Length: 630
Image 1 (spheres, rainbow, N blue to C red):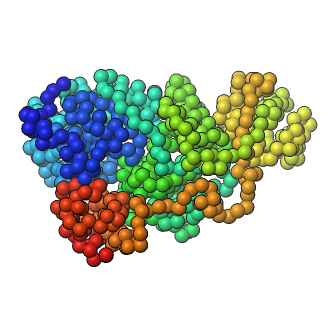
Image 2 (cartoon, rainbow, N blue to C red):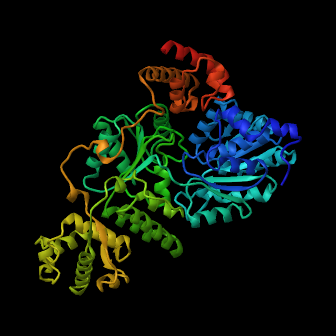
Image 3 (cartoon, rainbow, N blue to C red):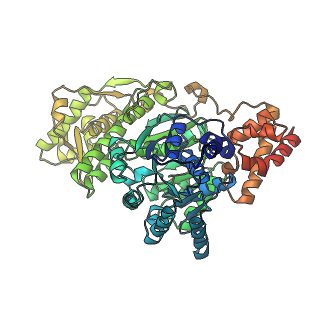
């Protein structure tokens, strides 16, 4: 391991703790941040798994600053998104750290100026996308820096993108192994918020991080409340959730298709919400405009495909809602993790139904991937379905998927209002028997709607035309509601006992169905919500165990007035600097200022989030605002 500092005195002047306080205004590292930072400062490679909002950026930004001050040059950050680069560089500029990005938004003169700053050693951090980093021109610049000892580290953000097993594979990430091959002496730090065992192993192998130290932080986000509901007019369910729980809050609504994004955004806007669509099919200028509004304005609801969200640093996203089932738990966790980055209460809400299960399985089965990949994707989908169908603590199951043990959280829907359950073993056997009888009666296969009609004894045209009223299974499930039958089928498909086939998602028995038919496998399911208690239009938040949204820190009336004055001042500064307001100061920092009401610059310096540059730039104005609002 190479020595980092040229002298003990220099080391004392640039220790990570001092940089954390002086530059970022924080008094202490969180969790494993200190250990990670010290390892990387010392020249070690690392793979860091840390949840969204856990402070991943500090894990490479602090080492970059420390090593730059020690004369070791620039840190190169691999970032997949232009918007993320812009926000990170803007935030670092506010902190007084020389940073830049190279991407397609720069014209030729601007790009050449950044390259000159890079080669001269003026930059502490440079952000670029993987496809740019791997160009011969950029690699030649890196080689020049390395030969002069001016290449301090590589940080590979969103490292799960390198894995073909993962939920967000990007082919351009595969070439990043060249960084180790061409610059073996430069420490590398790969970071991601989500990676199961397969994805983790893929990151290590593809980025050649076999000798890297692994840091796995807790995946728990205790401020997020997880709620999963069965689809029953999902638009109505979503609107009730938004109006009851998140009036005027910023949030994200994920949909599976571009068409559904457009339709949902239009409908929400007609319902009076400030909703915008975002998907890859929109013009780039429209996407940029919508994203800027989401980042810079309060109360905007972004309706999007998964094309939106990676690297979004907006701290006050109060909810993430899914109108369709994601592909796997990694995707679900990554997307829901965009809520509540500020540590304040937030919601992860999802609706799903049988059609979601069928569609996801069809996409896997009809893909051109190899059978091993399909098998793993089916297993990942099964894990997400098990989480969705669970009647015990959601958080326990979620963390268990990532190999972490926990206790019931008391803050998910199942903990707050434990669902009723019923023994569905006999119903499952009836459904499987009916599918089997279809095969005997002519060999044709049918979908879920027809199956339920036969089980419930409904004499529809299709039933009588096929002669299915004469089957021995006709009407044997009349005592079970349609909602319960959908739940049974969803679970049978989720467990792999029933397969869906073809364009019309007809049902067929899998080999494991025999175990259920013989009574060797028990099936216990939650009672659908519509059966438990229906008809109440709105819910009192406190009645389901969730307290009203608190301010970032407790504020009395006078402090609240100071807080609002600070927010108004911050909005002016943000507009002037063309930055999202949270980059100037986060709400939690403003609230602490309002509560503590510092009267001197020294006292203001003690507020968390006030670093030296911001104190110098804004300190006098903040004291003026506090005094005038008193």
